[in-house]
Length: 137
Image (cartoon, rainbow, N blue to C red; front, side, top):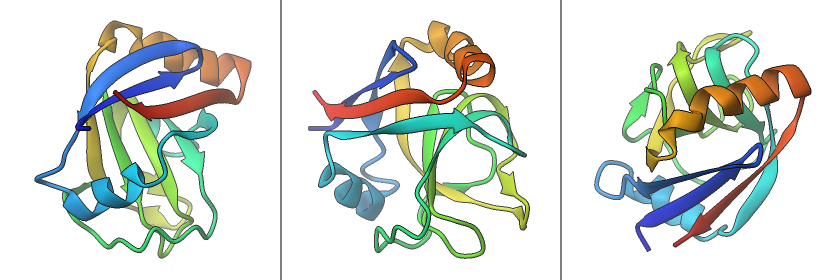
């Protein structure tokens, strides 16, 4: 179960979990699959969408963390100085919040459907909140 399908804003993407680099984050997230929510456009971080998770505690700390996920990378910010969130980069991202620079655990890398990243971002930016679903393949 290392392959994952992500459907966001009506567009399908396929990738893999970063099991070696972020084992605890992957383990915890897999326990929540299938996972459905809404994505909204990021406020400060650039070309990304996020799932706001408030004070949700996944029980993970930093592992494989970055402030600059590449397009198609999905990170989990475990909370702390800002709320817990999942961030999905579709272009250039400098992960931050009103509290300043943040870093999240890169735990999913998408490898298929990347040609639809810009369209996904456009839909969320101009049409508002969109559904997202994570499911194991």
